[in-house]
Amino acid sequence: MKQEVATVRTESFYLGVKLRDGVGRLNDAVLRSQLSRSDALVRESFFEQSHQLKELIARTAPHLTTDAQRKVVGHFDGAFAAYLTNMTALIERARRAGAAGLGQPGVCRDR
Image 1 (cartoon, rainbow, N blue to C red):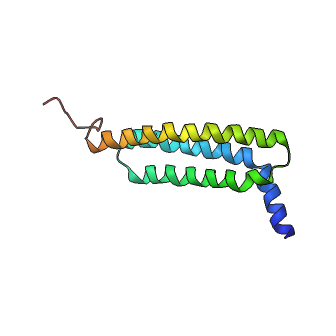
Image 2 (tube, rainbow, N blue to C red):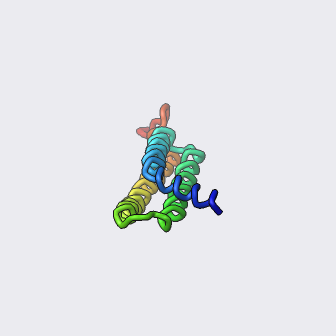
């Protein structure tokens, strides 16, 4: 039990760092999706990482100790939901363009 409490406290303490790093990795995945356009692994990585961040928030939020912490996490959660909506649309747009052969090197659609 003591170990679980210590783990939760540590996770709560580092929540901001983990969220910042996680969003950075998501941004990298979005950029890679724009460059590769048809790489399913990049999309899967984005969705897996975003799921992990959502789980981290859900697991940590109930253990925050101050109103200020809960307020910040609440704001982040709302902003993160909007971010995921926008980035998912961007990734899907890149996937569709890749499937259509648009924007790929060596592909000419003028003829």
